[in-house]
Amino acid sequence: MISDETKRKLRELNLDEMVDILKIQDDNQSLYLTMTFDERITLAIDGLYQGKNNKRSVRLMKQAKFRFTDADVNSIYYADRGLDKNQILELSTCQYMRNNFSIVLNGFTGSGKTFLACALGKVACRQLYRVRYIRMPELLELRTEATLQGKGIGKLVNKFSNYNLLILDEWLLQELSDDDVRFIFELTEKRYDCHSTLFCTQYKVSDWHTRLGGGTMADAILDRIVHKSIRIDTGSMNMREYFSTKEI
Image (cartoon, rainbow, N blue to C red; front, side, top):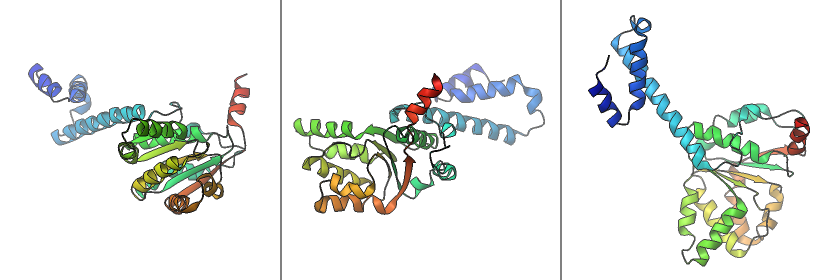
C-alpha cells in the first residue's frame, strides 16, 4: 500500500485519480498478483489517462453551450426522415474535422437540425475538440455590441475562429446589414481550411447568395464554404410535433 506521504504528493501534482486507481489495486490484490510491475503501472496510467480525458470532455461540453445538452447520436430518430444512418455514424468519427470540412444541415423548422448539430458537437467534445454552439442572431448581436463599444470586430472574429467546430444555428434566418456580411466574411476567411463549421439553416445553399446580399462579398463567403462542405437534408418531418405527440 502506498504511504500517506506519497498520496499527498500525488494530490499535490493533481493526480487524485492515480491515488484512487492505486487504492483499487491495493484493495483487490488477488486480481493483480499474476501481473508484472510493468503491466500494473500500464493499467494505472491507462486509467489515469482515461479519467483525465473524461473530465476534460465534460468541461468542453459545458463550455460549448449546447442548446440541447441531452442530444446524443445514439438517440437520433431515423424512420421517415430520409437521414442516412451510416453517414451520421461516419460523421461521428470526426474525420470531416480532421479534413477541415464543414457540414450544412438544411431542413424546415422543427426538423431536428439543432438536436443533430448538438449531438455531433458532443461527439467532437468527447474526442477533445473545442466546440461552440451559438445562434446566428446572438453572434450578430455580439458584433453590434463590439462595434458600438468601439472595440471593433477583430477580437470577436479571433475568438470564434479558434474553435475546432463552430455550430451556427439559424444561419441566414434574419436580414443582414452590410456590416453583418463583412463580419461573416472575416469569420469564414479565418476559419477557412483550418477548422470546421456546422451550419443549421432553413435555406438551401442556392438561396445563400441572395441572403448574403449578392455581389462579390457573397461570392467570397460562399467560395469558402460550399466547396468543402457535407450537405444533409433533415427532411420535412416536424420532430417537435412528433415527440410531443409521443409524450401524451
